[in-house]
Length: 84
Image (cartoon, rainbow, N blue to C red; front, top):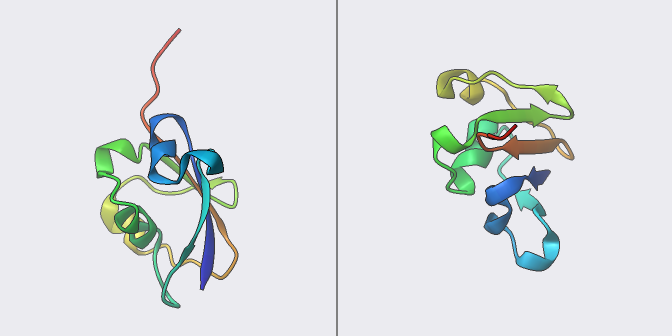
């Protein structure tokens, strides 16, 4: 199944530069949200906020494994942000 991924800030480098942090992943049917994070080799501490179709997902890895994705869903991953 194809899942659309949007990466922000320093995570954008996981996709080619011209894609500006946007890409698609082909995953086996029944893959979880954590499978996306693992496929992109993003350490848990850098997947601070994760959205699926604009809805915030749970933070713990175990809970992310329970979120089963469907074809065409959009996963957005934000690292920890600081500033003021």
